[in-house]
Image (tube, rainbow, N blue to C red; front, side):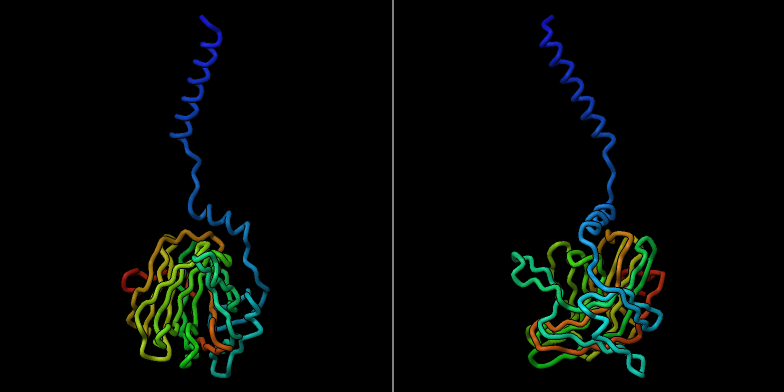
Length: 252
């Protein structure tokens, strides 16, 4: 038998066996593993701090946030922000990208449930579109979610969510009549959801998706002023619990 024929026959059999083994025994990677790898490449940029409000201790400041806050005598945190400060990764070739808004963050173990809640009161004006007070879920400056009480293009004040994985989406939700609202982000390790309430009793679901963030995760607060010359937001009744809501539709 021709030796060349035998060689190519054996090589073909070897490749087939290898392909079958790869098909039946694929290397298993999870979304959390994938995002952890991204996080190792692009780590959180910030400075250490120690700011306590309620049962939350903020230990990381982004964009100088620790120099822009003070806790008033009534226990409310006043959060100042300079002009043209925002957190947004523009999907249109980055033309409007801006990662300069100040954030105060605290670390959570994402392998365990958690619920992060705060009452927010942004400074709204007649002209400063997109002023907002935000809650954040944060890995680094390209992987995060913002949950905001924001002024829209028509001067209305509404709930907004922005989820970013390289680039940001942008979602407007219900209009809020008052000057303050309660915001809540909760995870049972599998699902993460955002809720808002005007009375801290009845919660409305704004957004829910799979929690594929890495184990080391940060949550926190932010004040933004993308178009104006500066603003002030107020945060109070802040809490961080090591448990999730029991009903992910009702938020209770």
